Image (cartoon, rainbow, N blue to C red; front, top):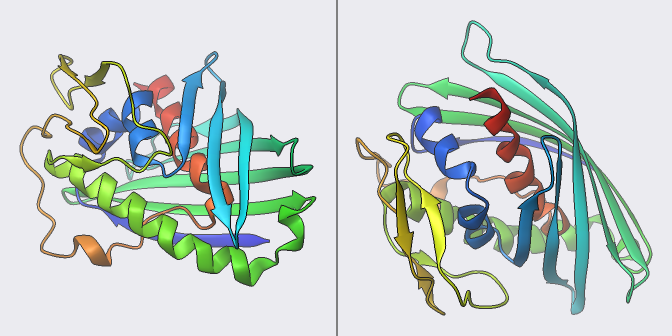
Amino acid sequence: MKFSSRFEVPAAPDKVVALFFDPATMRECLPGCEEFEQVDETTYRGTLTNEISHVKFKAAFSAVITSMEEKGDDGAATVNAVLKGEDRRLGSTIKIDASVRITPQGEASVVEYEFEIAMWGKLGRLGEAVIRRRSVEVERQFAENLAAVCAGRPVPHSGSKPAKKKVLLAAATDGTTAEKVSQPSELTVPAIAGGVSTNGRREDLPFLVAVAAAAFAWGIIVGTWKRGR
């Protein structure tokens, strides 16, 4: 299956990417993401739980960054990665060849992505139509969470388990950190310096996550921007 699209994040690239760098923030934004950590400069791993057509899965995943094109004259950069996940209980595996390009557009950021997804086992038999339908709900949840982060508002907790301990969230521009205590229903993140204008279109933004199984790809891929700072 191949998926490609583009969307606009209502904040300048440097401000948005600063939040993407923090695994704790992305773990809260990604529906079903229970664990997410950086192993080394090019490798990430974590755990994703979700449900598609009454089939529940819990997949351990890993990602390896295969290449990264530094920012060009237009301020854009491209990251390519290979992501793999496995649910041994269902006997299902997934592989994603992903490419993401982020380009500044005024005070906002335009993200273009391409996913080539292969699935085996029980998940692979569900069919593309079922997965696409499920992606609508995942997109909605992720859009609400990310928009809230950009605006400095409380974020609906979309993970499958409430966080139980403190996390440090990176401030957007000044390099300082703010300590917040995660609650079962929401997580508060610091406002992005300079503010964010959404022009009342928050619910209309067509955010990433093309399929539920690929939800973790967003956090992993944009996290590699840390290397270019």
